[in-house]
Image (cartoon, rainbow, N blue to C red; front, side):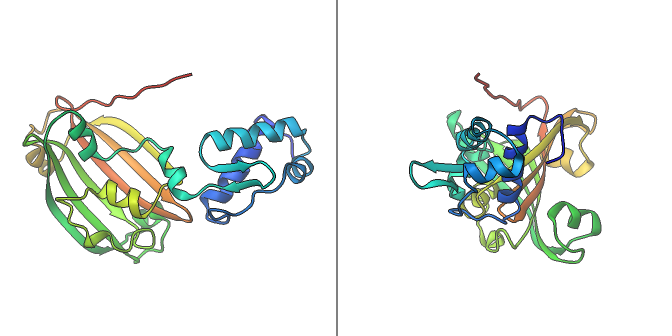
Amino acid sequence: MAKSDVPAYEQVKAWIRQRIGSGEWKPGDPVPSEAALMQQFGISRMTVNRALRELASDGLVTRIQGSGTRVAQLHRISSRLTIRDIHEEVAERGHVHTTRVLLAAREKAGAELAVSLGVDAGTTIFHTVLVHLENGAPIQYEDRYVNPAAAPAYLDTDFTRTSPTLHLLQNAPLTEASYSIEACLPTAEEARELDVKRGEACLVMMRRTVSGANVASVARLLYPGTRYSFAGQFQA
């Protein structure tokens, strides 16, 4: 292997993650043995062991004494990610969650969107636009595109009962997710649906999720800055 500033154990982890994320290795498939990884990367057993131990801690692989290491089942991988269903968030606060469905349609992917979803331009994709409310007050404007290869029954869902996030967690278990958050001003439609002024600051999350070999969805989630805050917990 070529020299790199990245620690050897992180190189092993990245190599294994890439093969799981791309779908090359399926749930239950064996991961190369410690001896094979030692030879491939030219590193010690201790280093290989650390990489596999951390991947197991992340829920990506399972290690069984005498049986080696295997790719974890998708539901185990999904459970390690912190993407949450907004209905669950609202219910935990003791409030009532409702949904307005503004759009649920099939569309052709434009060039830019096709790249984001990992499909060819012109491919039929699913598009939904929803407003989520807490005790009758709108708290999220959700504009989401979904890859039918990952969730073919997506548009059959009653989104007033099952949120898009929950449907995807149940039918396209996550193997990877990325997001960014920034402040922005809403469009005229977004301001109207969220019942805010055009000049009122909002928070927008751009989120992309992957399930096995497929990008599952890309979503733009807009929150009124005065009604919603992001919270999390980190532990060493």
